Length: 389
Image 1 (tube, rainbow, N blue to C red):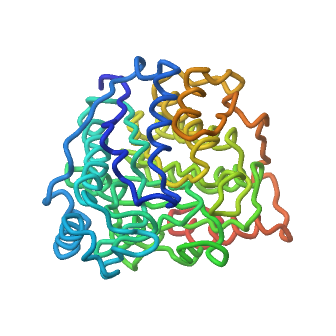
Image 2: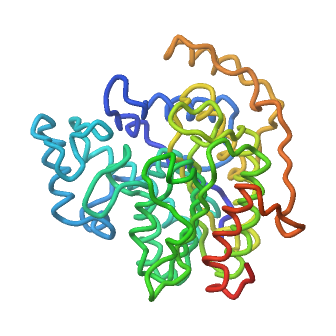
């Protein structure tokens, strides 16, 4: 194992662009990379670009007819009519859609390969984490499911146990669907309650097919959940299940849309709590997978104030040089923000809070909605893993 971390980056991924006014503004990717560079983090790990995922790789998760449909609308966006989820308000067709979607997928697959083969201890693709794409349809701003493809490639290479942890505010439905029947994969998703947010799935009772019972884990948190409760939920569910499953690789998705500034959701999590969860995932990898960790981006639509800082923290943690929360954001980056967006960028790498939480096993409040959500999940899946709820 080289011990060296790897960052997957090709400037061409910023071509994943659904057009003006769409929430998935690719400036969030460019600004993240510029912030990584402004802090010199790109010198602390190996920055590399992988080729686009080819047909055989895409077919590890996606149907042949769906890939053909993406290719067709990529060549002629005007032909998109909403079939296969392409040409909708969420997923408008655009020229080159197939090529850039496959490029993002290629970065996540290559990250998985590097970690499995020992070429890197950790690998990050913050352009990835497009977890809503289904085997036969685009959904929720996602065309190809790079997260599921990374896991599928690990299985193809010989991995027997993989844990996927998703802390995006939206349920990781596409990854769950891809491995619903596969006992080699444990998918864990913490997200806003399906009653108040897309994709309206991710209930505690969704626990996997009979042959993979307990292989899907869902923690559905009420709107308004803040730092202490969010961290409490994470630590009440994730570490115990990871330990019980004994994975060889940890794949994590770090959507930044749990943040209180995010315009598309209703949780109230700070940048500092998001950083704490990235640290926790890093620690879980070193405790349970000999450090093998693939970290992906995901959602996040506060594209200036939140996303670049959250993912720069993620890169710093993976690189072994965490960015101090109190550090001043480099002025050259703030100038780049203004040049690109005419907005003023944040001044520090923190929201000014020190997140803390109480351990769930020290006692819970049966009248608290977050504690009810935690207990519902533990009752649904812990017994399948030999754990007490």
